[in-house]
Amino acid sequence: MILTTFRFITFLVSCLLPLSSALAQRDIPFSGPFPAAPTGLEGIPLGEGPWVYPTAEGMDIRVSVVAKLEYPMAIEFLPDEKMLVVTRRGEIYLIEDGRLQLEPIMGGPPSVFSGESGQGGTSHGYIDLIKHPDFATNQLLYLSYTKPKPEGRNSIAIGRARWNGNSLENFSDIFDPPAGIAGAGRIAFGHDGKLYVTTNGGDPQSLSSVGGKVLRLNDDGSVPVDNPFVNNPGARGEVFSYGHRGALGLAIHPESGAVFQNENGPNGGDEINLIKPGVNYGWPIVSLGRTYPGPWQTNDRPTHEIFEPPLVYWMPAIAVSGMLFYTGDTLSAWKGDILVGALRTGEVPGTGHLERVMINRDYQEVRRESFIFDLRQRVRDVEMGPDEFVYLATEQRDGAILRIEPAD
Image (cartoon, rainbow, N blue to C red; front, top):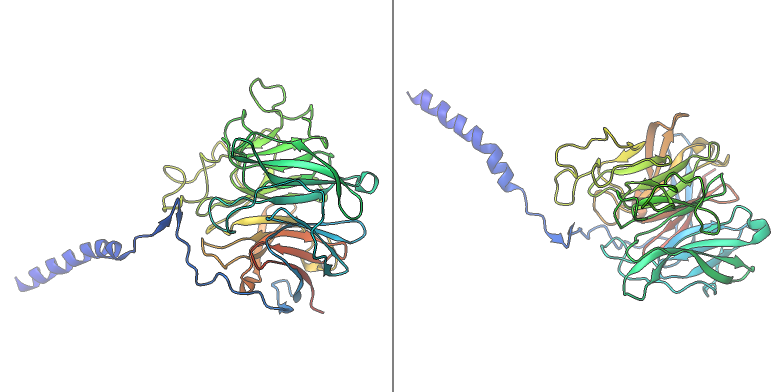
């Protein structure tokens, strides 16, 4: 009888253990729609460097500081090896011979800058800057930025201007969508000479909205006649693909000319996508991530049965940002790989870094590697310079332009 009673008590305790464990879990505090982020790793100052790191491919790298400045968003190299840097404050700076000019370049448009990097509701003044494919002849630069609107809301806009060697001349918008198309629009010229644009906001599943899309424009902002929805009644002719969320990276494959985009999931589910004309990538109907409170974004389990799945995804999220196909010989062990910036990992500030993704000839992931976690920097842009070194823009108040080169 005593043995039977003991077994019953043991059984009862074992049944209650999962419940007691669940009750022991903490309630997660929220700040608006987002979990309140911990602060123990953020705000750690960037040192003077340089730093040397071993890599998985047997190639040691050296990371050094080119310049320090607030909130750098994007880098563009000019043919004379000068470097232009745009910032969230709505400024353009010139770096020449490794020296940062203290005064910003004149001629850009007014923009909206607000909030602290990594928090909800921020506005990025200047976002991306690229050269026209025929820059040597026409000297045209294209800028994406957050444009103030009379009705009090803002939107991403794209304009172009002529570079005179010292400033921008005759800036004018070529794409100015309605208010509410927000976020961080990336721009890139494809091998077809068309301008590709990522957008956030709006209704990603609606073809009548340009929000949550990859757009394709002529270099003057007009709509190409061969865009996939150009003849669909009610559809915006600029739309090239749809169903996207938080697209912060855009890159053109150097050989095939294929368009690659990356986007942030909610709590997990960051993606790299191969962009195809007219294809639906599923957001917000499907996702390989969870909502911020915890459940899957979908009602059941993530699925891509009728939508285009990603080539690469992350769980937990790393807040994917700038993206590059490395094509140089200087860092030969990385040739052909994707380098992608990370703003933070697993919803923890101070965990930004750089990742390398090796892909095969069918664009399938083989392996990946992470770098510079210890620098605690939000890597917003990744570019290859004329010297074939890799340059990073780390977008935060104590941000910097970093250079990666072989350590030998």
